Length: 208
Image (cartoon, rainbow, N blue to C red; front, side, top):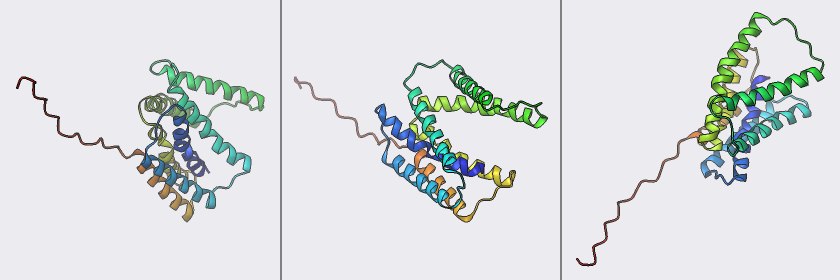
């Protein structure tokens, strides 16, 4: 189901923290704790809700691994300014998917009104707004915080899957969702800067 797939993607912050260390970035103790808690939630989910072939499950884990590696690498690459950064990313991904579509022999039919509305929504909210916001976060925030969306997505996916898609989530799945949300709170909770001490008194001049 879409909700279970979104929960599996929640391993992204762990990969982001690990890849960030390749470029000398540090991950705080509370972030590691939040990542560990989130992974416990994923383990609970796998124990009760995940029903997939081994290949499908492996691809679900491979997807965030590749995504987060590219995200952390992009922090150290010269990228086009503004919207061109996310535009280049989506054009490249679209070209690859188009090629795969041709290789798989997929056929294009006449689009329905619903699919056109979905395309318009994804163009505005999923692309122009969401991708631009993500690229900004990747460049300006901590890796674990920039990828914390992966902990929020399951909540949205579960709500939409259960409310609109007719999906069902068992007791263990709801418990896993609660654990995952606890993990994201630990990751995104703001850091408090240490309080500044009293300013040192100016040294007395030698002639005093």
